[in-house]
Length: 64
Image: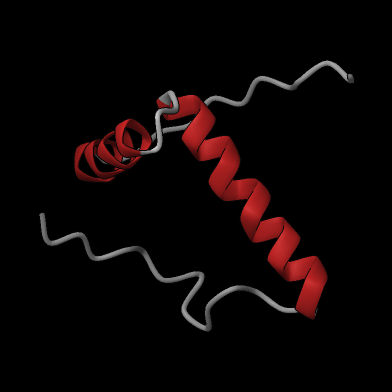
């Protein structure tokens, strides 16, 4: 398997907490959950040739 790249990532506290909770539900680490989500987005884009959502560039509104 190819070596993985390290990418520094800054997330808001609310977004991190939401991803951490989701990761716990899926029995993954936060890093593993982020990698899984990015992989799924890329897979979906390759599948239908466009982004998953129309508002992909809009910052998420987290009401937590």
